[in-house]
Length: 169
Image (cartoon, rainbow, N blue to C red; front, top):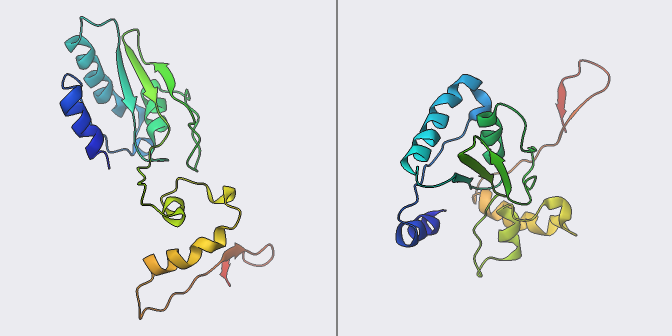
């Protein structure tokens, strides 16, 4: 996804450092954040001629960019939500006097050749914002249900009475 960004940085901003992060910060204890903070401090020392270094977090929507920043800060400084689109504008958070973290909204690369359905399936548009979301179901079925295979769609719900176990209808 970010090949074009990496190519741009290599060509136009060769002095910039790129660190790729595999995120699962919500599953590890806070003391684990010491290593990334040390790495950021090393970058800061490497660029001691600068007043401050800025570290941008970019990625697909809802992958945990804000959660990483919250973990590094050991507190809730960025809002998070279980649905994409919570971060709407860039947010600047000071990790230290010399290190600024930038929380960016999620990025989904689109093409001029993308259909409306393709854009919807990439998660660029929230389903709640679609006037008729059901019009995209046939394409979804074509993409994810291979020919000759039976597709079963289930709706689960919890009963109020009885054993409380989910029932499939």
